Length: 396
Image (cartoon, rainbow, N blue to C red; front, side, top):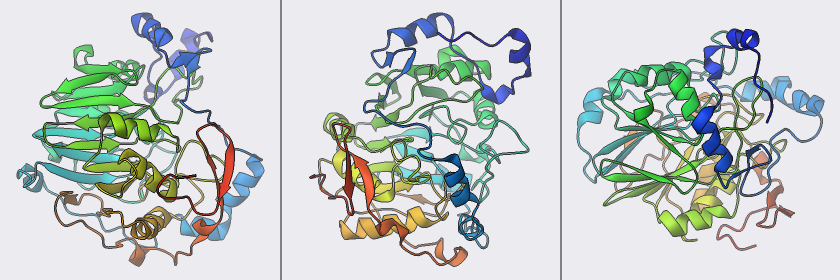
């Protein structure tokens, strides 16, 4: 195991770096079937650092014309959600409110589940640097009303936000987190008895729903050392009447089919489709790969509702800020797959009319279709295969 930082260096770390696992938590991590060679492992090999030259990446990322496309040209139209709106019971028993990026409030069978809440201005350990929001949070955190359980997918800054967690630590909510992430939350003031810290395939019950940590293809890390001692996960939430899925961050892998077979089909899947780039093809999905993941989760058929997440709020990749939404509209229509495109903060019920207006177009530079180029996708054995268009039914 790598040695810990000296007490002197540890005292200089920002609080947002969190804490490393120790004691019984570290022993549990070492016993995990998903932990080997001193770190958590992916279900399929994944390159977690950018491929190729960093100079090539910098040239793409900082090119003047590309930088302009990565930000809206005007004010992003945020929906004016209020506490009164969210206090009304849903007609169907399932209501979804996308707050931007991967933050989603899901009201399912009487239980209020808040995924990856990030209300901070920057996804960074520092208040003065790092990616800044492209739109404000749709409503103050306190205006959400009581939350039964906060679910965290992994410990990257755009999914685990210190000021947001500290605010929620003062409430009665339970926190469901992947194995090892509990060390950060305890360090920030969350009592241990309100943590449900799970390995893949482990479950916890909150009210009428069961939350299961399911595999994902990603990585972790917040501090200077990043010893890979915190797990990343997707989440399946099942209630008496409804089932939902949140992907967290993940590259495409064959495990979506297994997750769907065990926990689906789902009324709605919240699928990461932004911050993709050819420099890191294994750890994030394009919209086309996200659609394929949704179909795998649904048993290969275009049913349930797909909500694209992880886009439109932070500038984290070379693509245009609204490209994921435009691309997802294209591939969902081609596959006859129902997809929702709410404004940040706009509630909808998957059983009812879906928001589908392309609200990003009036505040975007003209979007072309660079995504029609061939891409490399890993098959189940880990061998790269060039595909101009993925077979949406999952056939290779």
